[in-house]
Length: 138
Image (cartoon, rainbow, N blue to C red):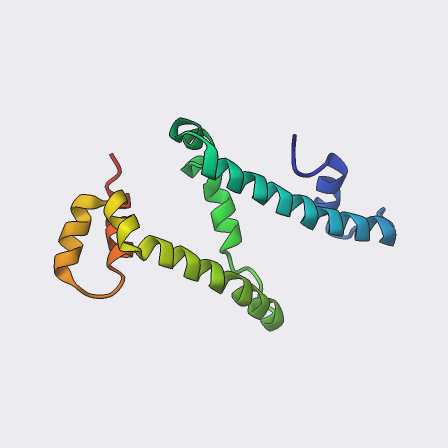
């Protein structure tokens, strides 16, 4: 079952929103946010409970690359929109950086490189270890 209905997708893809009454627009706007939140809650549940084999089929590069790129893009030139986007993205960036930089996470994901990075000292050791390890995927 998809998060959005076909009419909701049509509404989202319509730039002018012509053919949609104000009432329908308000209903779709509310439902889209509500359904998306529930979808994220469901994905969080899946991420926390699926086996590694199942996780590989869902949370992989091919399935998530476009979502990540779109979430973190900066297409607006309007200063108000840019400020809103910054306020939304900075906490997400902080959480991502804090998770990747956590020594416990880094040592589990990139143990050999972590040992090298640890000797180098300096900032963001965990992120550097994860980054370098991701460049040399097996």
